[in-house]
Length: 262
Ligand SMILES: NC(=O)c1ccc[n+]([C@@H]2O[C@H](COP(=O)([O-])OP(=O)(O)OC[C@H]3O[C@@H](n4cnc5c(N)ncnc54)[C@H](OP(=O)(O)O)[C@@H]3O)[C@@H](O)[C@H]2O)c1
Image (tube, rainbow, N blue to C red; front, top):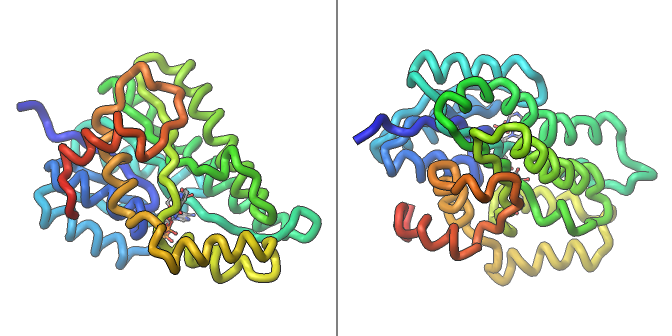
């Protein structure tokens, strides 16, 4: 058997990213998990280790380049290689129309959702070339669907898809994909339900509320399974593509690998 795969996951202190880390722990992977909340990261690290994986925590803010260098250096020093990056950390806000939105908050969204993945890719590419590794960028349906009062989020996720396509062309040894995780029952959805009132069209807010009330949001484990599988097994011919988490070509082998439960 070869060495355990090594995956860096951003935004793994909770939500989808936390479950990607737990899924990878279940198959004995070594994960570096990065976010700002130290205690939450430590709790996820304990879960990963309880499932049989190894975990390294890096506390930092992905809006700035230095933390990505730190994550790559520590990962190589502790685990010896990098097989994949999951650029998962993201924020939905600010929620306000373009005419009224705070420009600094708009910039902060772009720094998180677009510059973060760019910095991480830039820092990790030399290591990923050695392993012919993968980058999974967690995108959104908002990349193709215009959502009023979410211009920064929509623009950042649209740009992330195209960034994925360009990077795939530039790096033929790598497999670089973006994935839509569906509508997922995490803090991000709670934020939209809370902050959308009065700034989003009322029917938009009630749509999000109804999805929650009717239990139609996906549990984070479901897209996390697909994302974890993609980080280990996405085929080279998909490089550059924007994929759906529930595509049976992804969801079925992911279920087979990781099982129904956490
Ligand atoms: N939930 C949905 O319905 C949905 C739909 C489509 C796409 N997505 C995408 O899925 C991804 C994960 O979303 P989620 O729903 O799991 O969100 P979440 O529960 O709010 O978690 C977001 C994660 O990102 C981290 N993060 C945010 N800003 C950061 C920063 N500046 N530096 C470092 N880490 C940061 C957070 O950690 P700290 O706060 O500890 O730093 C947290 O771990 C995002 O890219 C999101 O756009 C989600």
